[in-house]
Image (cartoon, helix red, strand yellow):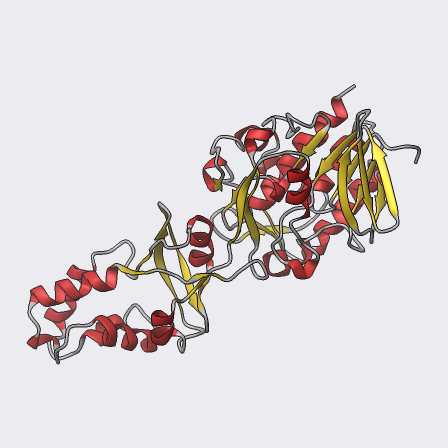
Amino acid sequence: MSAPDIIILGGGAAGCMAAIQAGQRGKKVLLIDGGARVGGKIPISGGGRCNFTNRGASAEHYLSENPHFAKSALGRFTPEDTEAWVAGAGIQYHEKKLGQLFCTRSAMEMVDLLERDLGAAGVELKLNARIEGLEALPGGGYRAYGDGWQASAPKAVLALGGPSYPSLGASDLAWRIAKGLGLALVDGAPALDGFVWNAEDASHFDDLQGLSLDVRLGTGGKSFDEAILFTHKGLSGPAALQGSLYWKPGQLVELNLWPGTDAGVDLLSFKHRFQRRYVVDWLAERLPRRLAERWDELMGPKADKLERISDKALTEAALRFQKVSFIPAGTVGYHKAEVARGGVSTAELDQRTLECKKAPGLHIVGEAVDVTGELGGYNFQWAWASGAAAGRALGDAG
């Protein structure tokens, strides 16, 4: 390839999509990544099956200081477009639940698809390249550089993601590059990574690891009806991962162990049917037995059989079971977080093209931007959509 028109840093989902779209429009694209293959987190995503989109993806499922920012890109490369792209490649997939689409065989099929389309679009790949920085050139354009290499082009795309899963080579380099170019950042934090008990709660629950149940978990103004999983350090499972996206240090997390029903009515009905049984027997109808015993020990009425406990006391106890709150010590951290929230402020970017207002010709896409999706394929859809928006804009430019 002669001198490229566009340099793309990062060969994850967003960077690859930007490269494919620009290459299909006749641009000479150089895609640079530190891995041996493109794809970033794709091989480990979705338990090795890649939850590549969600049929219900819309801006309401994303956290950002500008809740409307994602609408433009998501509206122009939709979940239907992603599904058609995957289906057209002959990849078998299925809906697991709640609109989540997974590869039926292997996530590596998505990597193969990206490599096929990159090749067809004439994109040049520079792999196993340690990326160290990107700078604006005095006369216009951008220079990327690393250990023993450099490359320049009139336009560039920053698609290096965030610092979640550093074991895969992830870092905060995209944020550091953006800051060096004078762009504002929204404070970053690990997200979709679950909660760590505070010391008191750890003493109550750290021996219950492996137990799971369906709950309603609420925090930060959002609630999720999904499963939680007790670990040796805290809470994981879909509901906890979702909640961690919206939680901030010091905030309460609330658990409803009886979502969709009135626990007080339920307990009184149980009493009238089984007066000589115990509160823990009622709890065990909905909870794992070990957890029922622990919750009864901590919050149950201090009495014997149900017939000896007043209806008022049982109703009050039921409310305690239905609304359990705690303040986590924190979340698990970047080493386990599926994504990082925060990043380059959307105020710095054009919402249609993802081009930087202060750095013309530079587009920033994917996880590096302050747009973070909930669990369930939303972050991959943002990667495809934001990458497509930037790639098409670059490809259609003169």
